[in-house]
Image (cartoon, rainbow, N blue to C red; front, side, top):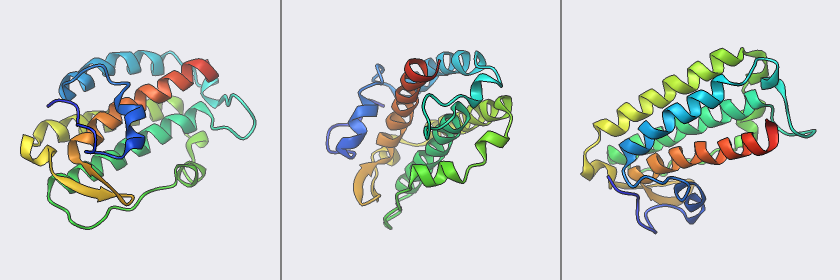
Length: 169
């Protein structure tokens, strides 16, 4: 399935979707997995508690934010694919992170959780028909398609990978 066209998602998501080189969503998921797995597995438990400035998230909190967001994007996609007509609410990433308890968890556990969530995201998108992927809905008061959240999920990970490499490591 090719990248979503402009207007099939909030303009804000372009910053993520444009980071995805592939025009095919399954290929984008497949190609990203070894890149992100290698990076996450190179981070030690000690390093995972690092925040690059006062008041910024730790690496643990950053990864759990990525995981939470992946879940939300997958949920939105599922809703749209199944024809949901109700508007899906937005979420406040800072509130989610403040209530995540990420820093009390082990790094390996957080990495494993993300990789499992990603696996289920891939399975979800692999199960959807072209018609279902193109279904539209509203999330956070913005129209989008189920497909747009798949590419946004991949791009969101690349966005935070860059931040991780530039500011944390």
